Image (cartoon, rainbow, N blue to C red):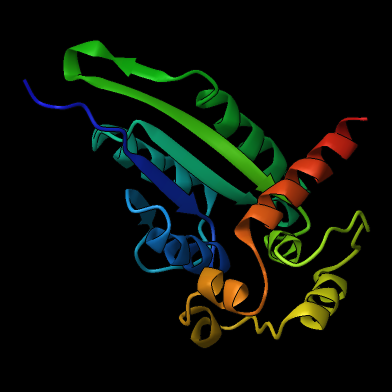
Length: 179
């Protein structure tokens, strides 16, 4: 009998997310990142990629959503509808499919998680420029594909950042938000 394996697909909405998660493939060997050519996607494309992932047999699909593009109508309603569509795991036993789709929302932007590699902040950023200024005080960061191709995760770690710190700081932020 064949061995069951757990597979995960990460769907990022834009180039920043794509390159960051691609850089984590050295740490998480069984991670697949889509799309292969990064671009900003719309919700119909995201829905299509989720369906492809389910049909391809992925057990988990993680959708990384940049909420600063979903804060106004009609995008907000469309996004809520998409989340509701995938709120329950997809189970098709006759086809051997069971897949859980999870949405992870970043607001103001993914770069906040990058800052968490270096330090914690509870500062509410009104725009991305403020956040990038704080991040650049910790490490040189350029929002450009050429820069991203260097491997963001290893770059942060080479410059005294830590994924463990980033995760702990993100968890702390979420806990404070719950209070």
